[in-house]
Length: 118
Image (cartoon, rainbow, N blue to C red; front, side):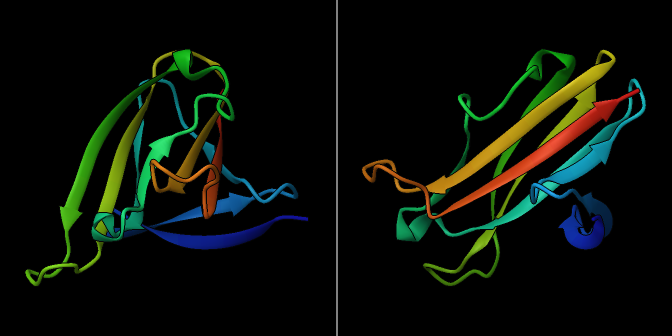
């Protein structure tokens, strides 16, 4: 079963198809890019990072970590973390992110993106 879920992407909405495993499915044409944006609040200790063990075949992508952007100007306010993915070769990749405090053993959230470059 597939359903469509909107997520915020660089001040616009991108509709991603969520597959049966709960991963966001993205199809990228060769040479094209998408930006993934997730809410983040590093003042709580939680940050997003690429899960190398949960990811696969990232060599077909050029990944630029665009970092954290503050939301509001008040201390402790949440913001956004973004990554730009560019398809450099054909194939299938899994890009997995974890939201975790560095001193804790397990993440509180995992986001998995299955990327096809036909």
